[in-house]
Length: 501
Image (cartoon, rainbow, N blue to C red; front, side, top):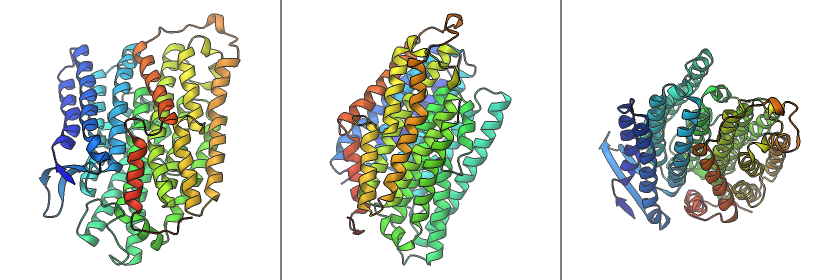
């Protein structure tokens, strides 16, 4: 049942309105930060209030205005979108508190612009998660690009300028490719509304036209998802403040890229059409290659944030590969890994930020014995690292288990070896950091100076670490990501027998 309700619009409007209030509070830092915190709590409350009805099979829908006879600026809460909406709104709360502590600890300039842009980014993410059609998705997709640009540029130095230009070039090209795909799809079908299982059919247009539209739209999503070789902007963007890195990796730009891929595969083309077009295997192999190559490159990175960035490239390709396998379990695993990676990677980046803030060391080769001074931080970093590697009883294991079962279900067990190899490589590039922190003595220990503990930074890290453990032990614990992912996968594959094993 569709429920006409303005709450999807309010979830988008609250952070946007907060950005305006933040901008007018430039002279009052406490008030400025209060607006940001209040907006994050209200937004999560609005999204959470819609969750019970969505879990019962209902949809909330709201049209702000009608753009054409067949297309409106419409927001809708289907299970797939709610996975992303709940995740992003939930994680904005801890990253908000962390941002306040980080900005004050570093005495960063342009804090008002930072918090305002952050809020607009979250408004854009909510619009992307709840977009009912391709045009609404595109509008928020481009809004996110423009809002996140000043965050990458935040430090205003030469390195930040180069990184932000690179980011803007990549993402604007991505947006234009996506728009071209949207126009092609509209010309073919006369509609843009997302439909579980896809609304395009093999008879909609010539085979080559459907293949071209798919390639264009997947390329657009893959740029923001940083699938190799379209990843160049992401390591460069690590020049931004650590909370921005956490935002980019956990809930914003790269996550919207993989969510775009999930929408295109599951709600525009659909598994049945993609199996008929015979092009999906190319995407699967590209994702598998990206997983392995990025993991190998991560091994060579000494800069902590760059190592985490290359880790993200590989982990996001898990999601693309899961979607490309087209089986119910692999698609469910892809949505679950969207959640798992966000929770674990936001923890790792927040830990990295606190390590840099307290030790003033950014390179892994310098992190000797830091666990003595940062025991809680390194404990959280270790737990999140084990989760990335797929350790049981952590959230990363649940998603990877479903992805592996999905590969078997699709009759393509070879991809399991890719995931196993990637898990071993993840352990190889993350656990040595923990080993150095715990078991290597710092030869310069007596000369080292450590900054003061910032509980505004430490408490959010502990919160997301606890979340990673709880969702690993009880996958369907509130907010029921497991059930939402199952509902989304079942809706996408309903009515199509792919010859599952």
